[in-house]
Image 1 (cartoon, rainbow, N blue to C red):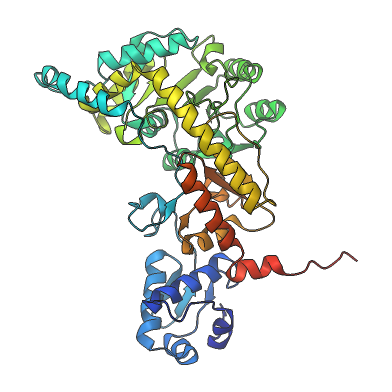
Image 2 (image 1 turned 90 degrees about the vertical axis):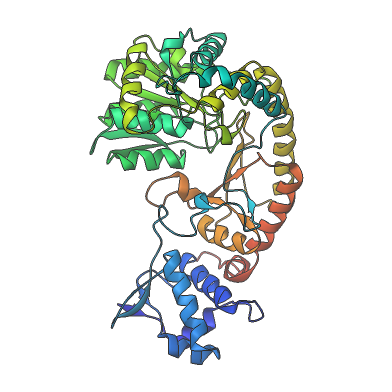
Length: 475
């Protein structure tokens, strides 16, 4: 096993000696060296006593720093063999951003979720007033409350997709809907076609079933029709997961012609297409409209997932599945192993919010447009080397960096008070290191301050030093 000496580590370190507690600053600096690649993975670090003597600190300080690195998943140890660098499992590491409660003071740009709209308070009050009538029953409805299913079905019909309430199954969030569908339709070793990049928790769900992910690449400009249809033909997949409406993370909107082509291919290939419409109602530009992909489906090959999280509020944890009535019943029976039924009060709130959907969409369009414009202006002023397309809707920019590592930048940004979502979260096998997802679901002032901090992080420490190095001319 390779090793690095204490003097070598000391030369690489860029820890603030005035920081308190210093062991945490030391751990952060060592972690930065690992994620930046300056100390590779599977390299043995110097003994605690040797590093302490070289740095002129107590052995207790170095021991505490090593302990913190082990806790975070960046260091592994075995008695008699020393300690060596590693990378954490993102699903289990203690500092996984998805597990953050937001109490650490960082600006949270890793999560693309807006705060609740103005309509929520009144909807909650009306739902609470209704609750006593429902409390006379047992409270378990595996399909979801009829009052909510009726409103969801009516909304699909308004959008051009005729739907009956019995085709709707209400779930605990859209993630619960996806997990339920995958648990029924995907098994170990089954190929599942996904976009790359795509929604990270969808990748987690497919992996959790032991299925095999088959990626098809898309860019900020959207899908290449021939690549998508070729992947459908060549993958042997019988299940696909797509985000055609303001794609997360790129924000692209799939054209109707490609939606029709995908539905036709699914019919010919005996493929089921799971469509995630979490962002579908959030057009920022007036012209950004498309028919639901399922509207082009002639033989029930498309399953549609919806959510209250993005249009209204993630704290509601209300999602749904639109499928055939028979499949909706199968899913309802299958859910008993997971959560039996969705919560009643939240369903009543969601039903009331559907009565105010156009009011909410107007509010969201106004606030998201202002935040999107502020984020775009701040990036062009502070980080003009970065490139991106302005999406017609959704809540995120998919930003191409100027040669730096998104993972290393995210680590640096955290030390400047911003939590980011690096590109590899949205892809497979470490791909997309040159990209960053930046949401514009936060207020404009927050986004402007976040971009200023990101710009400072980019130019600080080892990352900034590397960017500042002159480029040798080609010979």
